[in-house]
Image (cartoon, rainbow, N blue to C red):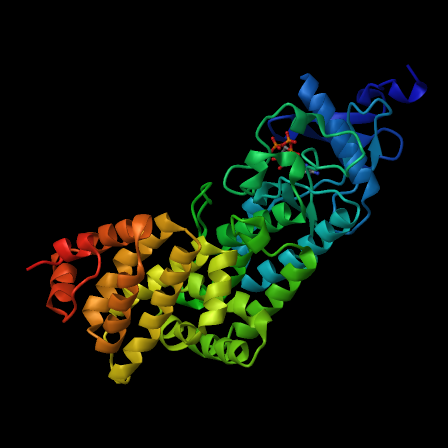
Length: 442
Ligand SMILES: Nc1ncnc2c1ncn2[C@@H]1O[C@H](COP(=O)(O)OP(=O)(O)OP(=O)(O)O)[C@@H](O)[C@H]1O
């Protein structure tokens, strides 16, 4: 055993007052004073399980590598990695939530994003960002308080480095409700996007004052906080490929939150659709996210999103079928429940065509489960709107279908309810397929 592995009793270096600053699942943290200098520190010592010992070593190694004002520094550590000291914090973000406002949230997010970016550049992913691991180092006032990311024991280390032993044991990584879904599949594959997810959940928690539950979306409903919804939706997408995937991108999205604070959501949707129609494809993603964030806003869906062209819809249905199916389902439901107001009656054909195009693309791509679910909503909307030109297109399409696709869509038509069946029955059309003909026979 080398000299560096010999542990030193921290009592020989530090004096304790017997008080614990906090205790977690793996370690306790005590206030201590350096015997020679009198400096006050927080001393973290693992509980004596092998896992806790592994974890503290990982934590020390990671924190020693990272130098940033918003990362908890290590003042001193045991040569045998049995304990370490750090500055004493006032408390966690959880503790101070009540006295902080939206401006504070923005500045905390910017600070924490900077800190995590440094880690990501070193190929380290924290994997356990939660309000309890964001600590406040006291300043002379609330405003000069410094927020730091602590508790790096769950960190994912770079490829090639020894794997974090905690990952290898297959135990759950991260904090329930804050941990990205991919961490429960294979925590070793975590990327920067896992930390983005957790920061998105921290934001949702901060704004709603509710604890996030794993697998459940959490978004603010308060009118004054609506401009945060797209940011949270983008940071907390379950699919990594659809999520904001770096801290640089998160910061840019945060800037969008600030810019959009005073822009009504309807104006934003109309601005984005105009950009997409002018060929700016980068505006498509924010437009979808906006739609997902405002599922009850008929202007976003019917007046803006519905203008998307067929090539874009076909492409999206190929890339992200679940997502576009859900958006089209929401549009269909809105068509049924939204008073048409002073919109042109002919315009009903536009959102109906959006849904129908999506549906056709799903069938062509053999996404028959999704197609069946969407078809039910589409038939209801088609019947509700009574737009004859569209219904003619619908029936022509139905006549083209056969086999499993035809059966799935027939099921959906029945599923639409008696009023839907009656609508197509009354339409002057004789279905080509025997199944549909029987279904619609008077
Ligand atoms: N530097 C510090 N100053 C004051 N209190 C601290 C400090 N570091 C940690 N604490 C408190 O000690 C408690 C336990 O610390 P920590 O969360 O790091 O332990 P852990 O066992 O690794 O945690 P967990 O089980 O939550 O992952 C926390 O609740 C935190 O509030």
